[in-house]
Image (cartoon, rainbow, N blue to C red; front, side, top):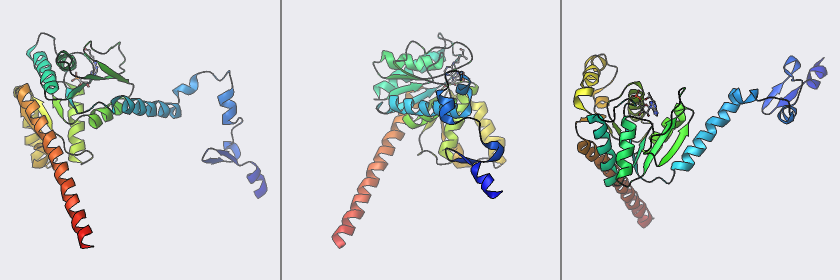
Length: 269
Ligand SMILES: C/C(=C\CNc1ncnc2c1ncn2[C@@H]1O[C@H](COP(=O)(O)O)[C@@H](O)[C@H]1O)CO
């Protein structure tokens, strides 16, 4: 009986199958079958490969971007609104400060920031997302990378930006804001600045956070301190640039200290 079971053992990659679990065909057979159809492209293992390729393509496209800041904000900001003008100014000032500008590549506030960056002669990046309705990158994206998966795209924002500037927006913007805050709060990323622009727009959210959320012990004072709120593009850019310089200075100091320690240890040896 025992030898019967051994005969029916089947190895499928790292998985061992027996009895009824043994497939009728081999993986090679299924791969090479010309009449297999395309249904396998809708399976989870295939999706994993697509997800992997999004990371590979994203890292490949952005690895040499240089210092960059992300600008988030509503896809519905009208072109003739003060918020759009604010986005344009942000894009321009970030470029003048030596940064590439990364947005979601869509319309509204994203377009405004891309436009300001592109018109100022800087690097204007759009990380687009596949949506159920027809959607293309705005005309002011000079380097565009398209994603199927939100989570792969979010990784790129965090990995390649040195700060987040957030204009008024809806669910998408709030999602990006809270994702950034959670990553900083949980120390999944080195602390970087998160600046909200538009005090009047954000006040309600801040009242709720500093009210019931803080009072209920769901967050701490230090968590609230992760958020800066300003009214102008110039203030927002000043904050993210200063934080970036401080971080670099901190990194340099750390290196110096390490050198000193290494030197002392070496001399004393
Ligand atoms: C709603 C419309 C188009 C949406 N197109 C988008 N293209 C790229 N990125 C988008 C889009 N919509 C949302 N995002 C991301 O979320 C943020 C804006 O979302 P909100 O809900 O509008 O605040 C933005 O920062 C993007 O990263 C039709 O006009």
